[in-house]
Image (tube, rainbow, N blue to C red; front, side, top):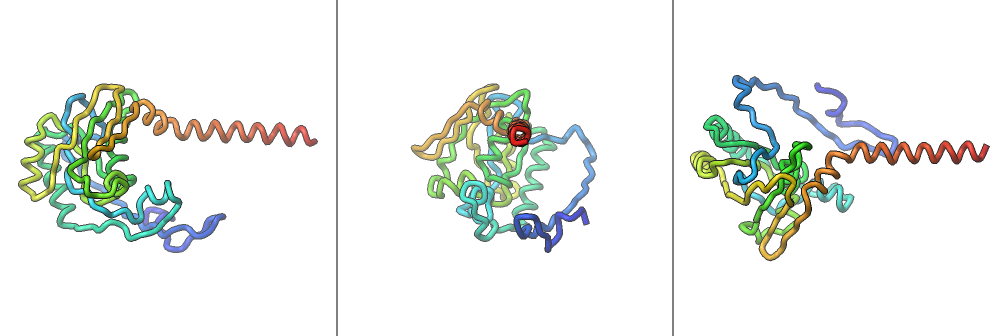
Length: 231
């Protein structure tokens, strides 16, 4: 047990809490020099997607946050694909071919790309990505679907990453490049293109809690003034 988060029966003031079983895991890293983070590190590095997008959109953050719906089956999980992905990624890391690696979980591929670009608050990078290889998929599923067994990798040697992926039977494709520091976040799918300054995304990401707390403080002050005025 890691805490109350894995309870299958719980209530909040607004109603039932969804069951959220959680697995806590501990691992041993024999060489910390081989640890790579999730943040892009070098402009010009290739961005490679390990794994394959699907049309699955059920149980996603997109449906919950944008449409307020908690519906649909979660994406299928194939343990053999997960293992192959991990083995390919570890070999590429041990070969020195990987600068960063970020899973595509909450929020899907678009969120993973954005987080990798802006994770280092002091040094956000632009992104130039083309996902037209999956143009047949719906835009929502491609950008925000949470299909399993996928990792976004940045690398100065995409051929090496592709080699290890092929060795383990993992789908892999170079989808773009890391842009300049403070550049634009650009994603294209066929004729469609979305772009915004990475600074705008970074501000929304890193300043979300301070901004929320500021609004709460202002609301509290306003309430205090109103109460004092009524008295």
